[in-house]
Amino acid sequence: MSDEFDVVVVGAGPAGENVADRAVRGGLTAAIVERELAGGECSYWACIPSKALLRPVELAAEVARVPGLTPGPIDTAAVLARRDEAVSHFDDAGQVEWIKNVPAEFVRGHGRLDGPRRVVVTAKDGSVRTLTARCAVVLATGTGAAVPPIPGLAEASPWTSREVTAARSVPGRLAVLGGGVVACEMAQAMHGLGARETTVLARSGLLGRMEPFAGELVAASFAEAGITVRTGVKVTRVERPAPGGPVTVHLSEGPPVEADELLVATGRRPATGDIGLETVGLEAGSTVKVDDSMRATGVSDGWLYAVGDINGRALLTHMGKYQARVCGDVIAARAKGEPDDLPGLRDLADAYGAPQVVFTDPQVASVGRTEAEARAEGFDVRVVEYDLAKVTGAYLQGEGYRGKVKAVVDERRRVLLGVTFAGPAVGEMLHSATIAVVGEVPLDRLWHAVPSFPTVSEIWLRLLETYGL
Ligand SMILES: Cc1cc2nc3c(=O)[nH]c(=O)nc-3n(C[C@H](O)[C@H](O)[C@H](O)COP(=O)(O)OP(=O)(O)OC[C@H]3O[C@@H](n4cnc5c(N)ncnc54)[C@H](O)[C@@H]3O)c2cc1C
Ligand SMILES: NC(=O)c1ccc[n+]([C@@H]2O[C@H](COP(=O)([O-])OP(=O)(O)OC[C@H]3O[C@@H](n4cnc5c(N)ncnc54)[C@H](O)[C@@H]3O)[C@@H](O)[C@H]2O)c1
Image (cartoon, rainbow, N blue to C red; front, side, top):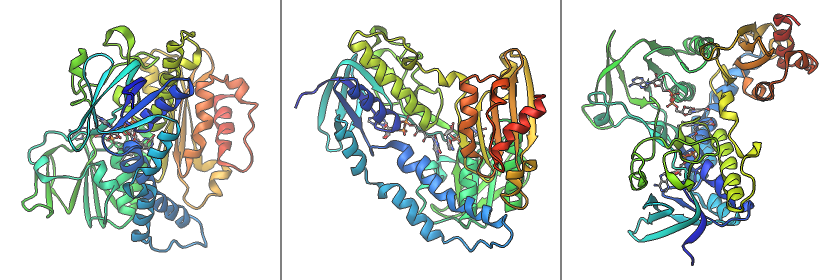
């Protein structure tokens, strides 16, 4: 068995798998190293299980809005069983088979760089294998949950995204630290699946990276559902006298929160602490900065690449996979001495602003720049907003439909810089906005893209009319 390949990929998450696939399609050989489960965080402890937990909660909320239907109680055990099925019962045989069919060599073990073009893989049994890359090494090791240095927090063994998405049961009282995407989605899921007291503790508002109205609508919906949101609070200390027993969260203001479980959802840190970055002149523990062809900017000779969460561009599966397609293709082009500067060989999408859907009720879906970002970048901005509930198609979705849309227009070119939707099931509408933003479709042309009646997509007509067309 040869230990020399054209490309060696470290990390078999969605990004790493797709690099290997594209490089092999381009005529190269590839090996892919994975220390845990092929499929990565996304398949077992992130996107897939979280959405499996959220879907029945979302559907129950939808049903409750339609007169004549009454949602029955959610069978939590059945939901957890379907989640288990969605994560293949933590068995990656199917993904390993997919990698072998690429065909790429699958190597199980912890990969570490050992100088240029060399990756040393240590298996669980301690055996060591050294892989050499003729063309490129691609790092795709992702991120892990960041746990802030709050007194008593680490000792309290809190849940992170891993434990909550893999939960065997729902805690009666759940405290959630953080106000971002993981915090909002998992507070919604656990509350909908039976937590009787759910308290979100956020430094500022919810979903702070998005348009402010989105977090406000989610907070209003949480309040109606009985989820407590305490904003503007700082956690000063955490106590859990008995392992697995109740936990007390002390705050900068107001009474402490007592809960049966504490979920920490305060962002991510790159999984680069122990992958040998220092052996090639990079800093261990940091993100790996890349150019638009995904090549690491900090090493000479251009043999090192990094895709997915590890490069810090956009912590989203679809963006990691997109970067991976660019990366695999550009490595193949360079290996064959073909032009490497075609449009398909550059990451252009991240600069527009990545599309993202937050699967709360209401959903939040956004692409491109927020108003604040567009203004900070000096665009000639005009904002158009519309109450989604006023669209006939939305009214027909059920009683009490609430939602809003905001479009950010570059007045100079009359194109969209960003769009944010908030409302039930708006996630499926996002791709229309992504096409308009990334395609830089002029508003006068968009006017001729006629939305069907009576769909919620008629929001496009209302936005353009409000703009003045
Ligand atoms: C709770 C949660 C929900 C999410 N939901 C969504 C969503 O709905 N939609 C979305 O787009 N994004 C979502 N994300 C983000 C998404 O999970 C990540 O963007 C995505 O997993 C990144 O893919 P990746 O391949 O870069 O890394 P990962 O999926 O983290 O995969 C990295 C792989 O590398 C392996 N690895 C690490 N170090 C080594 C090493 N030294 N040697 C060998 N292997 C190694 C790991 O074991 C892992 O398998 C969610 C995240 C969380 C936490
Ligand atoms: N549906 C989706 O697309 C989806 C779902 C989940 C996660 N993700 C991705 O995963 C990434 C990680 O999500 P996340 O929610 O962990 O991160 P995030 O960056 O979205 O949110 C982190 C939150 O923690 C707060 N915070 C940070 N440090 C803190 C501290 N010391 N004390 C109190 N609060 C603190 C921040 O203010 C913020 O509200 C996101 O960037 C997102 O792109 C995507």
